[in-house]
Length: 289
Image (tube, one colour):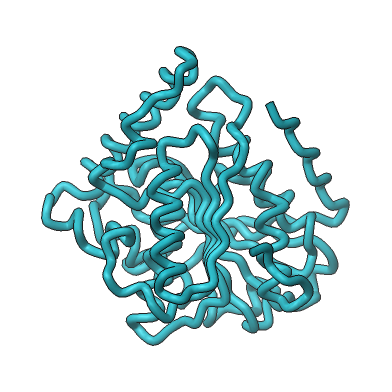
């Protein structure tokens, strides 16, 4: 088994601040992460959407991961945003919120210590679905312009039809974990997409979209034993076919036996990949092929 990478140490000057952001139908909770001098305007803002299968989760659940992400590179600011959960209102409420947050961020640069130069969207699991979708929406609606999209273990296939979603590992303990994750995804989609016709809508299932040109560069991360692995890699292949600069990485299996901890553990592996991708966007490093 591959050794777990070392955690990025938290910056001594890390600043974490809660704030309200603008959603499609009203204010949403959010949290801003900065490292370095607070008065400095960053060139890059990463807007992050949390996981939870569309029916759970909160903007503060990736607190440690996002704190370490800005600690690794003080030249960026990170905004973690909430969105309307399916338990309150189903599709398309969450994606409309996600796009509204990007528009709000562009209008409120000063609050975010950002100069407006580069905007990157990111997310994990259901939040990665939203990140992929707002990339489509921003293209279709004429903005805001995105410099990149980071999709970590993205939920992209409401049909749950891929091999990695159906096949369980040999190890019985991991099989139980993966089975639980698959069940959680199915329950989340039932809540998020109660209208079966919406399951093929590109803003619900970007994997089904036939229009994937003119999107921002993408970093797509999955894990070896992740049920979402195949749909992540299929989406990456489709983006590449459409001429989108795309990096697809299959990370080692997270060494955890509990479903609730897999995303956090996978994000530890993802930190170096994300940092390199953003440096490539910034022009300070060529992204990995």
